[in-house]
Image: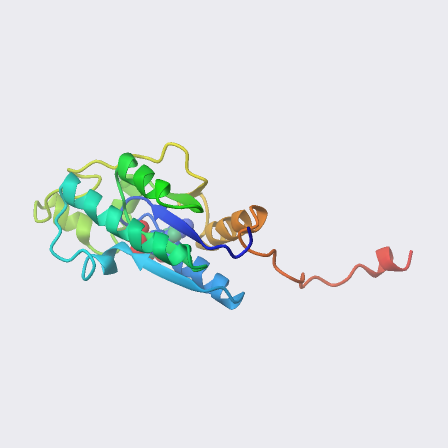
Length: 192
Ligand code: ADP
């Protein structure tokens, strides 16, 4: 199982923390020597999916394209990290079916909190009617039915969420457990 490649698929509202957590997970994996690629929704939309809009149909095509590229990478032993709103359950299910190893991570935060964070100032524009079909405002977000991992970014710190994902990958033996603990050895136990 180990190092057989997998796709880690982060889904959630804009501003929930997908990019932040996925970058943290990617850098930890790289330190451990794994080959990692991030497919970030915002970046993908400027190249792979340039010209697509935000109707359900276009969103599904976007997710399907990302899923296809992710499946190619992951079957070649790359740990592929997708960070994309991917709001529709059926499209997420479809990309899951394209994969042998697929881990869905629901990055969970309420619309209110995402709107307060408004990292990219997009919610303000959407509320002002300047961005139509904005997820959470006038386009739906369907919560994952059975995600492998939930990162609740209202309850957990960024570091906690990153650790949760890494631990999951270790437990499922997608990656090796971290080698050595930095803790002092327990001499009492050794010399008892
Ligand atoms: P998304 O990729 O889901 O649109 P981003 O990662 O771009 O979201 O933005 C999330 C914002 O929320 C960042 O500014 C991040 O610092 C902040 N944030 C606050 N708490 C958390 C947390 N526990 N986990 C992740 N992000 C958090």
